[in-house]
Image (cartoon, one colour):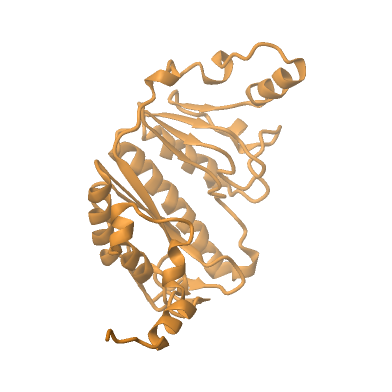
Length: 275
């Protein structure tokens, strides 16, 4: 069975620091992200779409959020959708989850489901997954792994100097194709702030073999365009062209060869001539 799992989308986040205009754009970007996740589940032929918490913000969700989620997940029928409420979308008396007339393919784990695990731990009784996951008739020995995959974390930073690169994104084009997925909220005109983690995107590549993943990743990274700021995409490409990395011969100190200070020292090191 194949699942698509996501979490921490935080639809309707207030983004108070961004102001009204930019805040609306950021919230629209979150909805576009969920749309891409839904399309991914369909394109990949997934058996179920799983949300592991914080789908939306309980304290600030807008009236049309309920209808947006209902229609988005209903369009996935017959694909099953399973939602486990988290800290920000808690399952309480006023929760959005209680207001939505979900289609038959959607299941929201309620308080009884979520408290089952806690009561089991307190009682130390025999564990049974029938109540929480009765929709999945799957044993551990039936789980198989196919192919290879790599994730590339795209940062707004200058890899040559090792410092962040905040600023305005003037042009944003994501790669696509078979086995290529991008998770990001970037758009043309987005300002990357200096106050937060510079992670701006994740590129995930899958193929049948590791060499195929590397070749596919090279093409995807070359296609990925983020203008207006510096990113670590060139560093990812250097690593993918590294012979040791391609042979799978590397350890935890592998990245030190790409540190700016070490490269500079190496360039100024005296060269001895053979006698």
